[in-house]
Structure formats: C-alpha cells, structure tokens
Length: 514
Image (cartoon, rainbow, N blue to C red; front, side, top):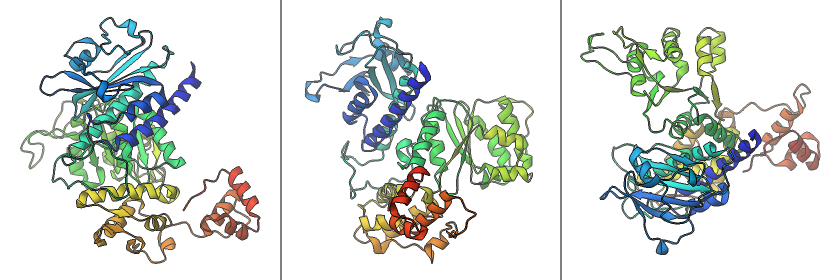
C-alpha cells in the first residue's frame, strides 16, 4: 500500500500529535479535556465520532464524558460495566481494541447510535499512573485501507498523552481551570513538596525548528519498536527528556522506566547498582538486592553518560545487551531480563573507539538508532518558546506569576548559549529571583560571560576572503557576522542582497530569526 500512503499518513498524524500535545498542555483533568482535541482528531487525522469515557470511581463503570458533535447539554451519559460491550472489554482487560469494521465484532453495542457499522473502530485505554481511568474511542472516516495498525498506534499515543495530562493535574491546586489559553502571565500553582513528578511527554520537548521537527519524527519512528537508542548531544541539550518521551510513547509505557547516571558511581558500585547483588557478596551486602536491569524488566532502562564507564565494565554490559541475561554480584545463576536500553552521552564515542577507550562491539550494539540533539546555538529560533516554557516552570516552583517581556526574549535569542538549555534556565531563574514584581525585563537578563559571543564557545570568526572555504560556509559565516541581516552580509561578501538571498535558497541555509 503502499509505503507512500503510509508515509503520508504518518506525517499527517505526527502533525496532528503536535497540535494535540499543545491542547493537552492546557488541560488539567481527563473530565475537563477540551472538546477541541476530538475536533482536532477529526479535522486533521480523519478520526471521527470521537468519544472520551471516564471511570466512575464509585460504581466502577465507564461513563461517556465528551462526544464529538454532541453538545454537553445534549449528551445523555451512557454507562458500560466491566465486560459489557467493546468499551466494557477494555475496562475488563485494559487493552486497546481495533476493529477493521464494527460488523466484525458482534458485541459492539453502539448505544450512542452514532457509529457507522462498515467503518473501522479504535478504542484505547487512558492510564494514569498505570491505572485505567478512561477510554478514548474514534472511528476512521474511511473503509479499512490496510493502515489500521498505524492509526491504532497513533490513538494509543494520544490516549497516553491524555493520561499524562491527568497525572499533571494532581499537582495543580483545586479550582484550576480545565483549559485556559496560554498567557505570558498566569497564576502559578503553589509548589508541591515531594511526591512523584509527572512523566514528561512530547509536549515537554519545546521547539518548532526544522532540526527539532526531525527529532520529533525520529522519536515517533523509534518509539514503536524495542530498538536500542543512543542519544548524542552536548551537556544541557535535554537528552533525558528525549529518553523519557521515547519510553512514555512506546508499547512499554505501562512498564517500569528506570534511570541511572553512569558517571555518578564508582565502578565497584556501578556493577552492583546495575546487576544487583546477593547477600554476603561483599562487606555491607546484608541482604539480596535487585539491580536496575531487573527493576526495568518489561520496560526501559535509561543509561545516561554511557561514555564514562571503564573498558572492563563495558565487557560486562555488552554481555547483558547481547544475551539478555545477567548475574548478580556474588551470584552464579543467570537471570533473564527483557529490557529496552536507551543510552546517552556527550562524548565523542567514535574517537574513544579509535583510541581504545570504548569497545567497538559495544559501540555498535548501542548505536543501533542514533539520535543527535542539536545545541541550542543551532536552533536559536526556538529560544523564545523555550524561554516561555521555562519561565512558566519557574513560576510554578516559586508559587507566583511571572511575566517575560518581549525585549527580554529578544535579548535571550541573540546569545549562543554554550551551556544550552541548562544555562538558559539558570539565567531565567536568576532573573526571576531578582524580580520583585514578577516582570522580567531586559535589564534583569544578566549573562555572566564577558565578551559574550567569544565566551559563548561559538566558532571563531572565519576569514571571508579565505579561498579555501566552500561557498556555503562563507555565506553562513557572513550572515553570522552580520547578525543574520542579509543586507549587511551582502556588503561583507561584496554581493547584492538579491545574490545573498539566492544563495540562501540554493544552498539550503536555514535563516535564523531574532
């Protein structure tokens, strides 16, 4: 069917997912999930007759809450008991149901009377902290075209995002509106002491640049499989966010998600931490202990800073990855584990392999699906959105409203952020602390480094008269030196602005906006 048809559908569903994520970022409760989500599914993805049912905690029944095309005042709630009809089957078994046509499932009740019996039907459970709290049901607007599995996976991802949104709502204070348009200044909920944090999803990864759209596409593709992923990128680029998104949008999302920073422990403790130990295996081992691999059985293990482990330990890790089994420290019995591994590093592993510091066989075992995160200086057009996302998070932690002025945002977008998002967040937190009123204007944006651009770790200025550099590098260098003002770059290059614009187009240069 085309692979072309599947590719077109995948792109369409991915775009829809971004829009759904933005809507859900404003929602605080499954029951308050705005109807525009269902409208978006219909308008952008051809998934019609959308319905969200929620669990009645008192009766244990599923109750219809939102139905696309039916106003709240006209909706007469329909209830489903465990095992009753298709939705009751989900309530009973907690698994997704996908039908090539409603006619293929005699137990389909159609109590709302809105579903077309010849068309497919997809219903996915909405889970909050692993417990079923509702069901998302839709009907594709065309006969089964062989792409039901693709649409089903998409519906599961949307249901998963709804569940994450509901999880976030538990941290919001009572009375928070279910859906509000994002504002530059909004009342932040009081900070919560302790307790689990919500699992981040795609909506926590901010950016709409071409580079980030490519990352989103890679997340979407790799999430479907159990493939080992190696996330590459400088410190502070958000590698852990990517790992979280892959897990929580994968078939293993209901399984455990275990994390370990390999650089945080000495080698003797790292082995015990990852593989576990038997009682008496070493001094202080007073009881048997499961390691991170065992804890992640059936789920995902995220190994951050994988480039920091020693060659000796690399051999032990390789065995687990190759054979899917391990032995606890002090034990002699192999234990089978089913774990998807996502690793991350800021190191140049290829150079480490060349110099014998990293095993080549382990490198190839980890580097099955590499994802390279761009540095913030490579996507400065995303800085305004990231800054507003971060200031909203800082506002929540400070328990007050914060506002970021346009002038401050413009200043932030002119710096190259060698410390990436982490440095940007530190800058904003410092500005928030210095703001008495909660308004962050230009004068509060303090960047510590003297001669900012030089100290920013940016590439040294290129000699535009150097005949050894290629044309693309020369044009990009001139644009950088001119602050991406094309008329100024044209003067540096002894060209006309029209000639510069033509080269930007033909050389595929992504123009940075400030």
